[in-house]
Length: 236
Image (cartoon, rainbow, N blue to C red):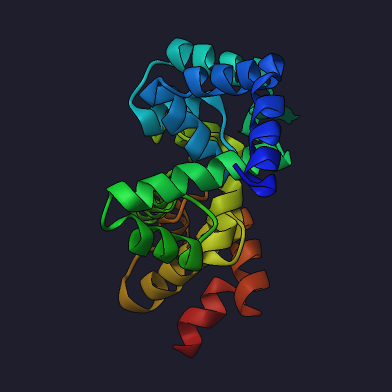
């Protein structure tokens, strides 16, 4: 055995003797041996989510998700922070956790032929999960189909199983403006169309686009088009 081989053997013996280090690593691998827990860890490497959102994405109950989150948090693999009334979770910004994420994705790419291409596409197009973006599009369609109704954010969050803060944030990133401003634009466009193409009264049009008060509707319309509904109708 030459000098280099002796040196290598001494290094291996020295490292193997570090029982506590290997025990820590074994505990981490044991923790991620549960496939659902591994999925949650990977999910939180890419997105910040609350318990309700994770449960919806994973098709799990919230108590089951909370159990996995507690174990991951106790192992310092993830961390939680409060935003308004909700607690959000994400992977802790530690070098070892980032390395663990890289290892998981490397193994995924080796075992799942289409993983790399789909993963790159998602990262290029959006920082959010595809599920969230699709959900926001459904919310948008639901609101534009129900412009006569005043639907609160909390109602949408419950109906579509998404956190209210996430809903507002992702909506703005997808459509370039806040939910309220975007829907107001749709209301005004529909109102303008009805003024020109129908014989409905101003009050009836106000009702059609979600305004109980004709005066409130007229004020918003004038602010949007720089003329009153009656003047708009006459002009067109």
